[in-house]
Length: 228
Image (cartoon, rainbow, N blue to C red; front, side):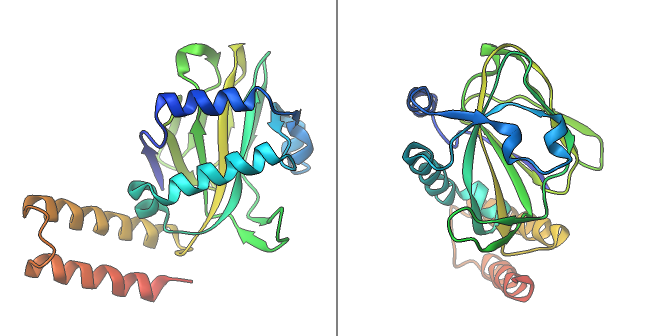
């Protein structure tokens, strides 16, 4: 899966988040990377143990669960609490694949990383470099979005963040365990849901039309069949 989700937060909301982040304590991002990724990671991360990090993490997670396009695409079951990073002064993150299994920092439970997401918190014209390159299997996508936009992609995809040579790149990043482990099944459910929503709009938002009811029945039965 590869999807851009626009306007998760408004520009004003992103500004408020950045102002809060200015008061935060930043630590070496390499400390949280795996043994291989640590060798190619040079950035800063907000201290996860701080009350600020937890509050902002809850804010992001709560907003995403209210964002219909995200819920439709990800079908989230569990979140690894959203984290925050900062790239500056040549900071980068070389090519890597995210860990398949993560330990939840608060509960200690195991979480399967099905999807990864980056939520951009400042505008692309405020820094040079910092493009997120993702190998989708159908070519490399280069992502640099406006503040408040997010990219969602398979955690198994090879990706990297190019060096930030001027300014600062500030973002939130996270992993999601989906209700649907199989990426192809999840993509088909997303396409079906989008078709249902499109049909409803064509029918003036009718939920009782026979075609809408039949497709909705199919969607929920497939969701029930594939849910872990």
